[in-house]
Amino acid sequence: MNSKDLLQLYNGQLQEFELAKKNYTDLQQAVYRDIPFDLFRLRIQYNPARMISTNARIDVRTLQNRKCFLCREHMPEAQKGIRYNDRYSIFINPYPIFERHFTVPSRHHEPQCIGGRFEDLLDLTFDFQGYTLFYNGPTCGASAPDHFHFQMCPRHLMPLEEDAANEELRRYLVKKDYYSVSILKDYLREVILLQASDSHLLSVLFRQTMEIIGRSIPFEEEPMINLLGWFDNCQWTVCLFPRRTRRPRQFYAEGTEKILFSPGCVDMAGLIISPREEDFRKYSAGLLTDMFSQVTAGPDSWEAIQKELIRVNLAYAEIFTPPTTGSRYPVFTGNLFPAERNFHLPDYRKKIYRSI
Image 1 (cartoon, rainbow, N blue to C red):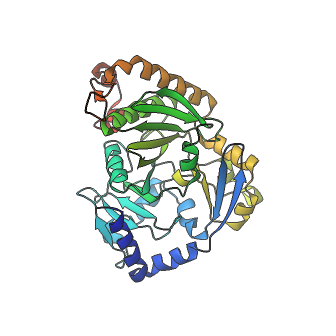
Image 2: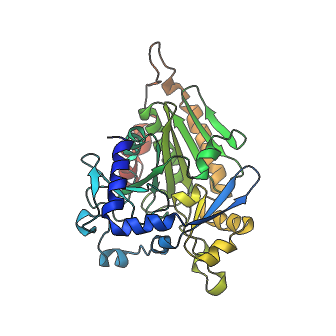
Image 3: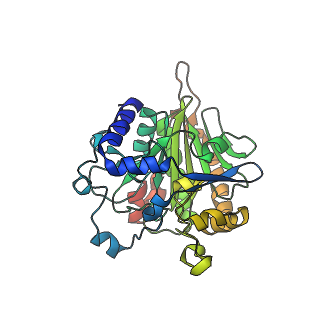
């Protein structure tokens, strides 16, 4: 399966699925404006069709009383998909942010939890190399936290992808010939970039990073993150945005102070989705700086995360040996997390980090 299959699905659904046809047609009329910062920009999209997702309630009672829209039996008859493998199917998103916006739900109704699924993201990005995959944590923008799903869209539609390639923005915490760990400086949103050419090595780095985030920021179901990834030039790039809360105080305000800002991956990646025109016109550099500061990791946690990423990578650098003659990839020779450390993790954390 490759990108041609996605295009065929997309074109077919625009002919057969009236809801999707209408919403993708309306998307062509979406209005945009940019807010510049020193080394990057944020783009605002006015998109009224995203009101349902932005304003979604995800409390237990609401989830129990509604039919899951990602379960095949509850989808409209006209909504068709393609089977990716035994774990996932792919559908077009009928409430799009992008042209060719796809949802990749689990074939079974199971919770939104990245544990045991990170390598699935790597497989998808490798198979669909013209696309960016993204994952919203259960309290970080996911409107269906009770049904696991990824989303995907064509490359280079979110400012993050351009920013990740800007060396003026990047600060490397670890830089080897065959992998790197870096951050983007003064970016409003704390973000960690992992890059590697070997999927197993990248899985280890991801597991390491998730554990460090979980030690630095309190969490319930899993460390709060938004996650994006793509494959390009024979390597993966994975971006993690650590979070401390779901929404800023402005979301819960009344009257003219209220702003429907409930950021998920797309917003964290620099494309702010505004379902209300009044909010679209109100956004400014100062307002976005304030709101992002409320939902991201925070200065103390962010400093702790960076220090620990450097310390752990230096302490375990010897477990990665450079590529041998005739091999493109490094050889992984050890366990970044010794058994005695994992043994002391609470059961719910063992569930998150096992077999990633």
